[in-house]
Image 1: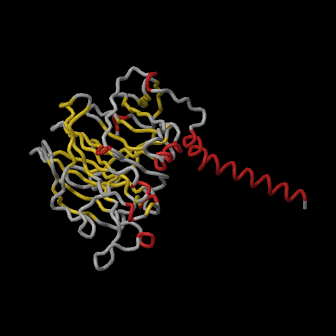
Image 2: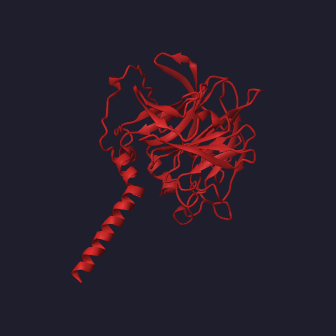
Image 3: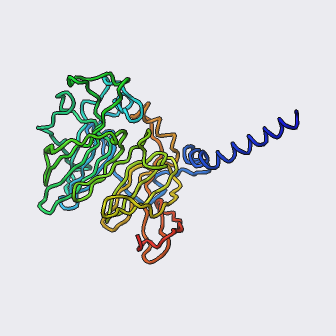
Length: 345
């Protein structure tokens, strides 16, 4: 009997070790920043300006219009974040933000040590139950040849009942939608075009749109997550390639968009950090916000004005004609092998 118990114990330990290696090791290493050295910004040759204003708080995402040189930001109320964010279980409708807005600033027109900025008005947008509000997460933009800028916003709106009144959010959960707005140069307002609602739009983190208004979303929680991803985050599209960071695994997944709009996985890159949103610049470099100690970001929910979780920025740069690319964190570089030449994507 004792021998049987020993064998069962050994088998159980072996099974747990295997499960740890497959499912938990990366999350724990990235979440707690094991064996990671945190360096202050002063260690790097950068000059940064910190712009502080209540209108620029809790800005989850941003989009740069290259043609108009406007930077658009999706900003919110940091205190309300822990009250109303239904995709992660915060469903106190009474604490819902009343001041979420897309804020625009002109990056080529600095004023003193900052910029002039304006919160864009939404004059014809009804919101939920006629309140005119949006509750923002990620968003993306697309520029048209005629100067019109399409903005596609994740709106974490509350659920309503058959009479159009607010429902019990703890029972029904949120009712996330994608909102399509248009604006233009020197933007002061954005006009609402359409609301997209679908059973598959459940816990959207970010939306990425193509020129023909086709868009993709990354559901970050629940059964509608993207494939086997653990926490799909701020996806981005460039030249028919979709880049999708996963916060838990610290990987960047790369997909080719087919003519019928299906996706084919091309590769994945181990970035070694808990990652957030990704963006692509005019040179084709991919910039990704990252967190050296992932669990520290939860402190910002509890004390947004005093918690300062460490963060960094990764740049993924293609190596032309080679079977690898480089991932930079400030000045340190590492080369990651690829299964395919980048040019074949």
